[in-house]
Image 1: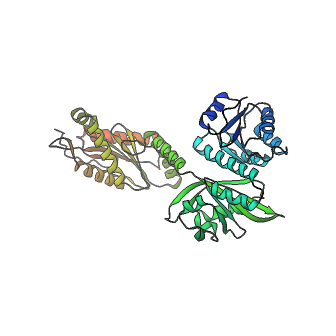
Image 2: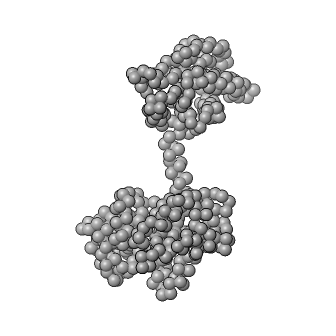
Length: 436
């Protein structure tokens, strides 16, 4: 156990058996005095001796688990007031609820996101320090409202907002007098959810939910909202809520999701996503006995185009093709880059005759695009396509054979001269002019 040089922000007790984790906290939170403990027994002793402003407690520690440590801290008059943030990898709501009931003030999931952890620490430290300094409850609340780097509000029995802080005013974009006295559901995206959260519970545990907050411009800002219902003689008195803007986190999550499912060049879905979705679409079509078709496209002589004009120009052709696909399909359709210059479309609720019409329209529009791979050089590029429909009446048909039929029809279109669409029911020859 040891400390780093004390600074003004406050004192943190880090309870973690992993030295690398403690070293990380020392590096990231140099504006705090940091104490260390590696197990539950040392944590309780250090909390009594040092009286930190906040305890960051890893629930996976030797001798006793995090819940037990919380219980010991809350049952000791010298440490019962200390805020505890419990870090856990367990997402089970009952486990988290038990931790809060045992005395944890807050929790954060592993792996730790320092962008989320820092405001949590700053808020709880400020709360604890204010509690130490103030005796008057009203003055205490008003200071919290102004200092907290998050939205804070109080709602009465009629679900009317009675107190807010400056951050709430800034986030909502209204003047304070335009918010006070209004129903809480006027400022959230889900009226039923917020009313259910406030109405439920017995006041012993904190609630937590992700919800959209509506500002004056009509924008929906995602927040991680937490709060506590305060009771008196078994009756609801008020609800104290606070929330952190999680816009950046949501954007990051969306980017990760997009990166995992999208092809960055064409902005179409990738092959892995296609395989998963096609399985779902086939099962849905079989369950409801509704038509389902596939179109597999391939850019004609694409290798020659790449070799002649370079891969950057080839990428431009692919990107243009991807945009054309997006502009010419419905929202329920799924377009994927299957591999190389092959694009495959899943057309829900679409019989093969309509799928052929769609394929022909896309083929025709693409052939009319003029590319400029070199100065004063205009080039048209063509497509070939194979179309098939899932055989609902044939129990032997499956995802693999479905794809194979589209691929075979595409191969037939290539063999027949390219720049055409071949389906299970049609053969339409197109005139093909090679790239020069």
